[in-house]
Image 1 (cartoon, rainbow, N blue to C red):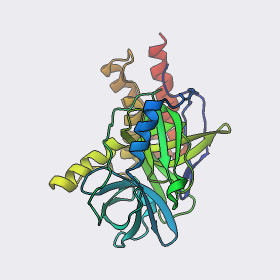
Image 2 (cartoon, rainbow, N blue to C red):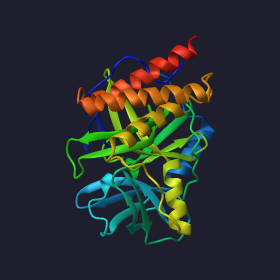
Image 3 (cartoon, one colour):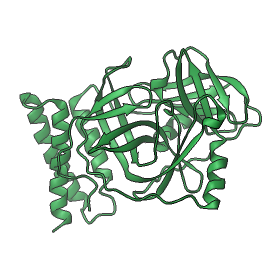
Length: 317
């Protein structure tokens, strides 16, 4: 069964864990029951949570995750109001230090910070190959260390691209999600930049949003695979990581379709079929856009529905 439904689900609300967003989602999300914590999993999660960081500046509170012994922290860009400012950082071991921004991508809501204190740090290993249905756990905290929350869930959709969605309140007019992980583990305001970990205690995503469809609440995280080229660039230099240009309608259509294509892995659809369907849907979408017969929100839903309908016809044949 394909992950994307031909049922239109439009004009849902996507809430950043700090700010409010509106987006069109054309996805049908299958309910998958969560597994209870095993004793081994609990130990691994407790160990993983030690790499969580509480960050604060000018009344904005968010989280980050330490991913290296040198104090590199992954987080969200919507928590960064001033890239030249040092941020207060409270570690799980009770220590207080500061963090500075060393990479910022406002368009795709990712940021990397560097801690000033780098001795005796707990840090977490990463894993990018997430699968639908696997158990995941969100971990977030507020100012008090005892406020830490660990919640179990499942990966509902492992790889989603959202090319542009409107920000209701915030500095930017829109943002994009690349390789978004939709999951059922609970997140709340203030947990932006918090951890999404697997049952082995490895970081698979950085939480940044939640949304509601048919009165059911789902969470969104950015896959750590999006951060990996950024980390490599910061560690080794070279060219800055490439991100798609969201200012161009063709790029946005390609971006949305690329996410839809990735969710066809391990199906019987051939690469030739995928290329043919993608090309036709893109051509039709650009024509619709040029005629101004749909808003872009409506167009994104239409693209998802058309792509899904054409691919499901092959899968079900």
